[in-house]
Length: 171
Image (cartoon, rainbow, N blue to C red):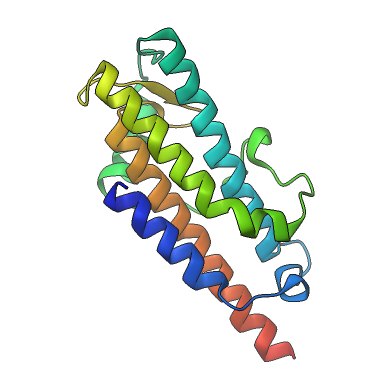
């Protein structure tokens, strides 16, 4: 497995270790609970895998030309590792109410599936080519997609850790 995605798997697993359904559903008013955060990540991994599945089926890059704004965003997230907070999740990755236990049980598998299809497309089309558009950051290479998912995942791992701390203080 790619080192970025392997670290992502480990960080998520560590953040939710020992959490049961009651703790996964606790949240302060107006905020997502840990289960919803995990579902958001889960949906982002399944969406990326589906997108790369389309790339593999086409046998070619499906990336478009990036805008200056997309390039700036990709630079901030992928190169500098900074994920701005406060941005609303794209509707396709917004929590829909999947059972937290299902998401928790399958999230590591979804990361592994995503890793496999990204690697296959990278091998088939090339490591230097932009392969698929991110909904906000625009066209990214396979390596950039992996780094995006690590930075994005770590951003949400911090949120899960803060939720755990807040819940413990209120208990």
